[in-house]
Image 1 (cartoon, one colour):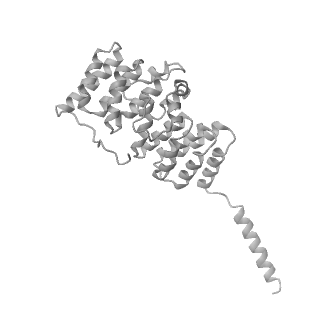
Image 2 (cartoon, helix red, strand yellow):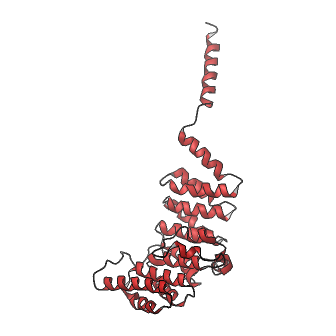
Image 3 (cartoon, rainbow, N blue to C red):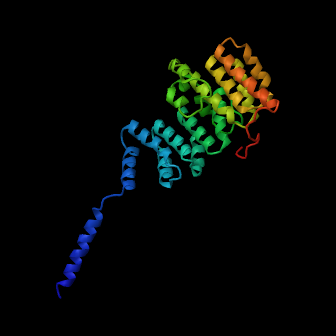
Length: 283
């Protein structure tokens, strides 16, 4: 009997060892893989891992990982994290995303602005308004340094094809048109901003789209502006859409024609206007 305590102790040690070497569950293995990516020294791997977080809607651990990645030293990772937080519907991340609007990198500002829009915060539209017009709507969302970044053609051109267009709707504008653009052309970013403003309830964005449809030099931006006008469904912009029928670029005429027909139908009660309020609780 005097050996019983020793036997029990040995059994306890064996059990403890068995527990420590237990095989992780598939979920734990998955998080181990993602965490390795999120902390990897390779920038591309870290960015890719941050982008994958957006697929895990409703997962609090993914939200925490996204918030951590939002503080990464590299803007590519911060931008991917901001986009992921929007995609996963992380409403709790809105304060951190709002802070990200003060980032010194344009791609992070655009990603954070878009994420806020996805999360139902209309203040995110202010970023795209600033990109398209070069001015602020309220003067509150961005400080002077960020305004300078967003109005700098070289900075915007540096965003590249994916950063400028990866997270916005295209309407009827074909991707082929954008692929022909050179790297130093900021048209894709301006077109993306115009298309994003299609759903902004602020009437000032409607006015900005009307101005862009006439004043922008690149036809891709003018066409995108008319596409956005059509999507807004505001009959008050019908006259602006009619002006586009005289554009020298056929593709712009097509977009303007679609806007004219849609807005005319809505004005006559044949079409359905988008349901939106022109006042935002987030202002």
